[in-house]
Image (cartoon, rainbow, N blue to C red; front, top):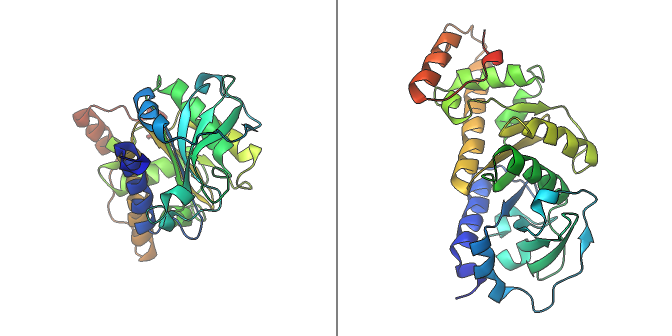
Length: 274
């Protein structure tokens, strides 16, 4: 038994491979972080480095995540290589008792650091943990092409994107009844986009980054990957329909969206409906 034999590592690696196979991670694009349970940390500790690496100040604070551990993709690493060489591509990091610093406990055997957007992920984990009473464990960022294309032609509002996606595929109001938040274009990896995303993630499970990609959260790998997959599939349908150049003859009406929500027992964001 080794670190890579643990079920949590197998499932994490599988999600990285699934994202690569969807075409969402060109070059070193995208990142994935997972907040480990106490039981998972205990199972990993026998495989941690004998000497922890130095503490690194993240420049942000998440007091509610003090003492937590995360699996993260590495900065500059390629999703396509995670399955081939996880010890080079991934790391497990420990957060200090103030929620301000991390140190690597396993992985990145050839050097490196967690994803350059780890502070943004960390801040958003902090927000989502508070918003979900601790249920959220996964944050995932990818570059799904159809959704990115939509950011060039739709108004960059939460309402416009949520309505377009809900109306493009019947299951969408069930999968993300709260809709999606939208963040205007900002330089990636900086404080501004991290803070803007945190504001959206206080009330949304997913945030669209204009001309860049999608940022989603969830309690486990299946739900989080499924959210990314569903949003991008809906975006693909929207793009395909509008690329025909034909007049739209029918759609899912707002009262039909309400009927879906009623029958499936979910609460749609009513202010996004007419």
